[in-house]
Length: 213
Image (cartoon, rainbow, N blue to C red):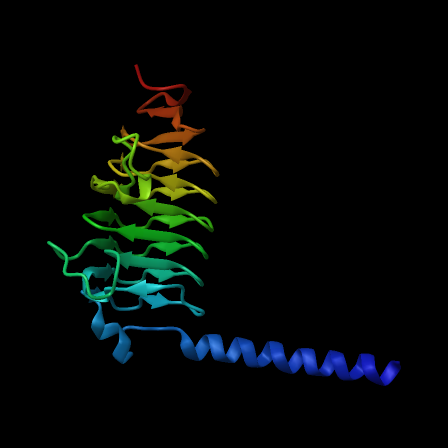
C-alpha cells in the first residue's frame, strides 16, 4: 500500500503542475492572435483560463488591465453568426476584476465602468423572457431588452443577478445573492430579493441606514 500512496502523491503533483502550466499558457492577453477578434482588448487585460463560452467577440470590449476570471461566459446575441445593431454590446471598463463562473449575456447594451470587481457566479443580462401571452410557451414569446450600466468603483458580491434596465451609480455595493432591477444612485448598499437600498452615504455625515430621503 505504501508504494501505491507514494505513486498517487507523485502523480497528483505532476497533474496539478501540468494543469497550472496549461492554464497559464491558455490565458489570453492583448498580444495573442485571438485578442484581435474583439472589438477592443486593452493593454494588460487578460482572459484567464479555462475560459467559459465566449462568442461574437467583435461586439465585446475589454478595457486595459481588466482581468476576466476562469469559466466566465461573455456573449453578444444568441449565436456567433448574429449581426448586432451596435458595437460594442458588452463593454468592460479599465482595471475590472470579474469573478470566476460569472455570465454577461448581452443583446443590446451592457456597460461596466472602471475598477469594478465582482465575486464569483454573477449574472448580468440586458434581455429577459416575456410572458404577455398566457397561451404561448414563454420561451417562444418575444423577449424584452433594456440597457444595463454599472457605475465605476462598484462591487458585486457572489451570485448577484443584474436584470435588464438596471442602472447602478458609482461606488455601489451589492450584497451576495441580491436580484437587482431598477435605477439606483451613487454610494449605496443594495441587498435582498428584489434588491433595495440598505444603506446610503451622506457627504459630511457618513453612512446612514435605509434609502436616501
